[in-house]
Structure formats: C-alpha cells, structure tokens
Amino acid sequence: MRETSPSPGRRFGILQLATTVTAAVLALAGCGGGNDSTSAGGPFVRPTFGSGWNANAATPPVVPAGPSGTGFWDIYRAPGAQAQSGDIYWAQPRTDAPEGAKAWNVVYVSEISPGVKKYVSGEIYVPDGGGTTPRDVVLWNHETTGVADACAPSRRSLVVDGISRVPGIRDLLAKGYVVAMSDYPGQGLPGPAYYMAGQPNARASLDVLRAAQNFPEANASKRYVMYGWSQGGQTTMWTESIAGTYAPEFTGLGAALIAPAVRIRQLTLNSMKSTELAGYVISTLPGIKAAYPDLRYGDFLTTEGLEQFPAMADGCFDVWSTAATVTDPYKPGALVSGSPWWDAMTAVDNFTPKGSMPFAIYQGAKDVVVPVELTAAERTALCKAGGAVDYLEPAGLDHESIVPEAAKRFPTWAKDRFEGRAAASNCP
Picture (spheres, rainbow, N blue to C red):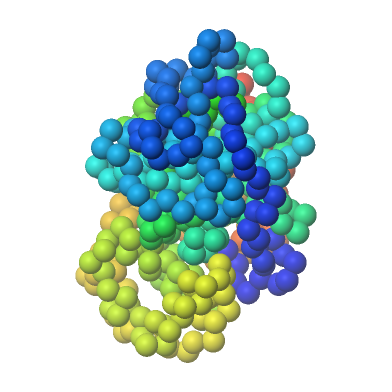
C-alpha cells in the first residue's frame, strides 16, 4: 500500500526496470539446486537440506545461471513433483548492490498453499568477505509495487531517484547480515499476483530464507529478523503467525512493522470512503481473487470500476490516477457482511499473532492510507499475544515519510536482537 498520486521524482513515482542487471555464466562455489535437471543451464546438485554452505567442500554444488535481461522471469512451468521449498531454479547477478556487497536475483520454489508449489522470484544481497561463520539474515517484506509483472521489486533498480527501495539495506549489509526478499507469488513471474492475500506471501517470504540457505555466497544462518512496510506489514505479521509450523527450522528473533497494512477488510472499507484511494481498492481485488478464484469482479465493481483494469495492467501505479476520477466505482453491497468479497477478506484476516518474537512498530501519526487506529489494533493484538512491542508514532509523518525514520532506527534494533539484548516494550 502506498500514498496516492505520487509526484514526479518521488520514491515510487516512476519505477524502472533493473537495467544494471547483468548475466552470463554464474560460477558460484556451492549451492543447493532444484529438481529438474533440464530446466536451466546445468545440472542441479542438492546439499544436505538446511546444512548451509561448506566453504571447504571438495566438489561444491552449482546454482544454474539464468538468462540475461527480462527472460530471467519468463518461467511458465510448475515445479516438479519432487521439488522442495527453497530449491533454486536459477540465479542472475545484479550490479546495483551497495558498495561492499554483492547481489543476485533468484527464482525458487515456494509452497504457496498446502500442496501447491510455484516458482517465485526474489533477491539475495550478501556482504563481501568470506569466512566460515554463518551470517544471520534480515528478511525484507516489500510494500505495494503494482500488480503487473514489470513492477516486481527484483525487476527494478535498488536505488530510484537516489533512494533505496529497501530501507536501511546499506547499514544492514555493513553490519554483516545477508538481506533476502521475495517478490511474492505472481509478482515478476507469470501468473496472478497474490496482492494482500496474506498467507501465500508469507510462505514465499519464509521460503526465500530456505533459498538463502541453498545459496553458496550467502552462507546463511538459520536466525533471522524481518521487517516490512505497508503490504509488507501484513506479510510480516502473517509470517510470524505461521513460522513455527511452516518453517520450524528457523529461529525468528524479531520483527518490525512500518505503517502496516494488515487487515484487508478494514483497510478496504477505509479506502472505499475516499475516491483518491479507489486505485488501491481496485488493485486489491485481483490478489484476493487469486486466493479465492470463485469471486467475481462484477459483484464488487460497476462498469466504471471495471474500466480501470487496463490501467492496472499497463502501469504500476497508473490506476491510482485514473481511478481517482471515477465517481461511482463500487456496487451497492459490494463489501457488506455475508457478501462473497466480505467472506473472502474475512478469511484472509483470520489469523492471530503467536507472540513468538518481539516487535517494533513505526507508524506515522498523519497516515491516512493506514490510519493510526488500525495499527493500534495490531499493537493491541501483539501485546495480548505476550511479546514485547516497541511502538513509535512520530507526529507529522505519513505513510511514506515514516519510512526514512524507520530506516534510521531498524538496523540498530535488528542488531540488538541478533546480539541477544532485551527488547524494549511500551505495551499499554
């Protein structure tokens, strides 16, 4: 989720494809592979799952090299029956990592729902320098980027208009952490994007941790701290809720939320009050329908509303501008108790925090996209679950201007979690 009508030159005004991405032969010293030996540029060789990378291995496994350019994301096949979550299909080096680090795009396997495995794209950033000690991992869960394939984070430059799209990544890499992130199912690769669908995105996020385990340059530990902005706040909370059962081999030490867009039904009802937020509402519907295919757009949108779909397909945020001019985009009863869309969004929202790790929350007091009262409800739920919650609500900041404040604070907060310091809490 993001603010409406971005001005030119602002952080998310114009999204660029990652023109700095290079590819050729990816010669990496060791990694797990996928299950289909004919799917890329060489055979897959799997290490013992979860063992990390043995830098002294006599015959290290190999990550297949993906093609250069946008062909990297053109994968229409499904994983084979023997595929395991976190298996890497192929990788592509990036050249826009911060100084002192290296980066790759990856395509990996995720079980996005029980028994359903898909290929998902993402990114892995690794500090320079070797050593045999495993590196701890910071997991970034991204915000709304648009639902078209070209809008996926891995297809974009890391820095746009002088600002990194991953808050605090330079500081995190400088502290020696691997930074891993998923595009989420259907963003980047063919297929529907599960925008704001909750659990599929959380599963993909946990599976990029597994991909980092299978990636040789990362030498990743099984300890992680995660954070997410807006849509990524929903992903982060869902991830905490399912991590103990879906990925019990990892140890989550903390999580941070930046203006978290968590409960999709309440957020949609809030956005339906303002024509300026109609683009968000319309963009949300395909993601919920991806999880619940029997839903019908015609039950929610008028003809005027349906006419906004081309703008959503052709541009990352074009629909924010075009939909803001529509006077009557929703049908009466589109989102009322008992309606199909109400039931589906209620199902997406049906999860509770487990209290398994401390949280930090950064919420702008002037946020109208994710109002303070909605974040306050999540704070209450987290406190009730029993974990420490450090809540910060700076005056004068909104949905976007809170991000630089969080970027300044989060790297140190993450470092404290990895070093075992007690987390502050101001639960009421």
